[in-house]
Image (cartoon, rainbow, N blue to C red; front, side, top):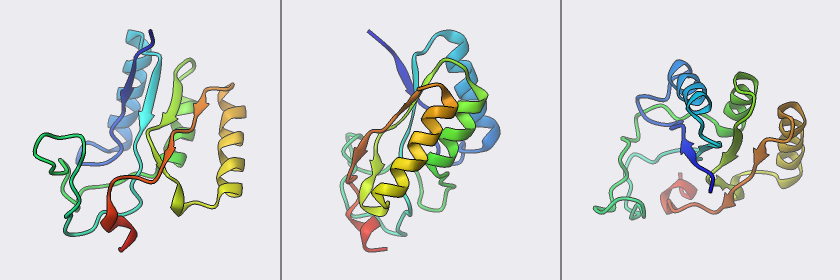
Length: 130
């Protein structure tokens, strides 16, 4: 069994120092992987039910910072040496698949084969209307 942790790239704790500190700590204490979620934009009002909380409410206000996961993966690959770094999940309809493939392949080369793509369409319908 392997264990991973979400490094939280959105919300008030999504600062470069916090994200890097959490990734380095995860590596130091023995986690196998770190994972980054993806949202391109948060609408001012969310009607979609968030599937990962009992109330269905998204836990982060839409005014909080949102870091970009692919760029963050590059930073984390340079700051760690052993952790697998993946997306959970990358919202694919926003991205050109050829360009994304090249970006991820490049990150995988620089990281020594530690990049994993989790791909999906997301849960937030309003994100596509924004």
